[in-house]
Amino acid sequence: MKNTAQTLHEVLYGHAEKQDGASLLIAPETGAQLSYGELARQTERFGRWAAGRGLQAGDRIAMLLPNGMQAGLIFLASMVNGYVIVPLNLLATPAQLLHCLRHSRARMVVTCADLAASLRKVLPELAGGDGVPEVIEVDPDENRFAQDGPARAGAQAPAPADMALLMYTSGTTGIPKGVPLSHANLLHGARSVANWHGRSRTTECCRRCRCTISMARSSPRWRLTFQAAALSRRAVSAPANGGAWSTAISAPG
Image (tube, rainbow, N blue to C red; front, side, top):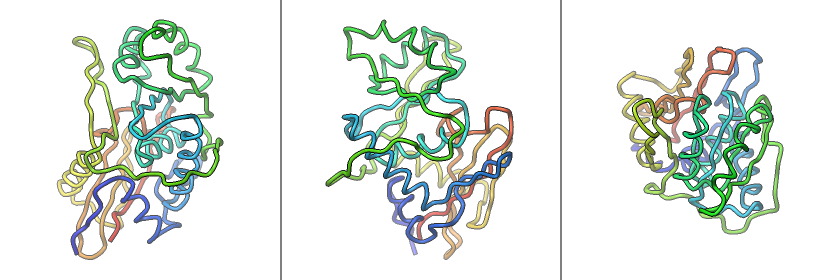
């Protein structure tokens, strides 16, 4: 049977329906886990909250967070809800941060207390353009999204061609360059990586300083893998203290 998932939204909710309690993300150092079903519920919670803040489908949400469960949750929930996630380099200079925020036209920046001060220093430079993005502080070690919002009616799922991720080059040879990736782009890359590595449905991937999210069908043995290094260099890789993430996802059958 051919897999028909064309967006991250379809992939996540397909898994949540078929294997609600199966582990999606595991933090080896703490034992904290996030299942498909829980990610789906947290994604709904995040979507209600974002819509309540005035965000609309296609709006950019920048993220300046250390690696961890909260970063992984926000990274995935943003894309599944139809927003565009913009991971910001933790090592970026103020000028690079300013460029990425201005170029991406981010409506919001999600960060933490340790990084908020450096972020707010560059925000006045954005006044008078497309507006200053709202800064939201979260706990990077929290295993769930703490905020919520009113019930939504008629939320529209993203289409395959819709942008899901806007990532920037490191800027070592010039200003950071924006690279837009659609849902279709990400799924195509995931399938290519999975086929190359030969991941199966039962594969659990552990990587030092990388996060590999494997997705596969059980029948036939068709495979696809999200490798976070291909999606975001820092957004959902290893925890900040250098530990490894263990992750496993399978595509809906």
